[in-house]
Length: 241
Ligand SMILES: [Zn+2]
Image (tube, rainbow, N blue to C red):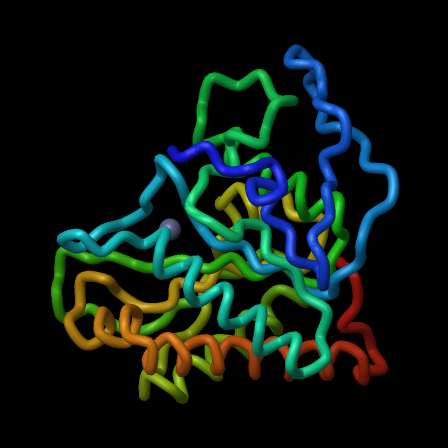
């Protein structure tokens, strides 16, 4: 991994870059460092994988790149809609490198725990984790949204799934993903969006071209906008889980 500057590695875009990590935590600390003053964002966009962790692949196409490119587009679109948003990764690095507070030997776990730590610090209304699917069956295609066990997450997943279904011409239903670390441990309403299959030719084209990425990001941003509106105007409790 290229040695990115600390500013860059923090990966924050909340209008301006903010150094959130403060003084380095002791390597032996079992808990994440306490953050003093936190910025605010309604939406935290998690760009899956990064750095040493490429995610799923097809030839030289890496999931981590697709996730980041679409995450940045979603971020820009939300900002245009006047929705406060933050990205937890803004370049090609592993979030596990920022985790100096957890003792686990598993890089994967330290990576996921750091993503959760960012969510804990920011306390967004929603967390949207972006990923790309893979199947050994090349004809398997389309978007799939995974949700937590709570009502808000199920509603959020349905809104995003239907927005993506409209784009893809698919009829997929969201599924429970409550065994996934981030969905299990996020301090807010959270979903994982599998934006399409890298193993399917049509999906791959959509996932890797500027036009296709724009469409996917548009569908996700529109869905987020819709859900936040629903949540703000619902009298009976689309509320914090
Ligand atoms: Zn992934």
